Length: 84
Image 1 (cartoon, rainbow, N blue to C red):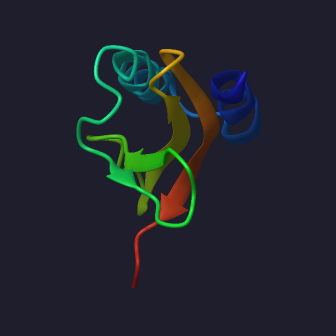
Image 2: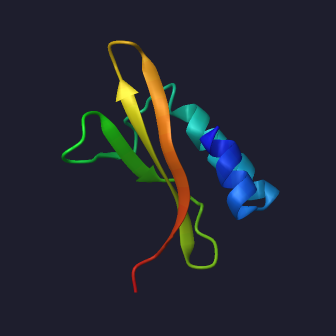
């Protein structure tokens, strides 16, 4: 759902869609690889999608990891501008 919403809202090119989709699917194998836990939230993790930098923005995804239930639930996928 969040992946579809990101595509519909930001209309990325097909290469970026493929890259982000592969990264999202990789979260089911190892949801903790290359991401950080967000302080103050139970089980909320976030990270940027490697190689997603386009025109000064990169794709960032946040998601909840429910280890006991073996569930990874996406919270958001958005492009964020690099700090200036």
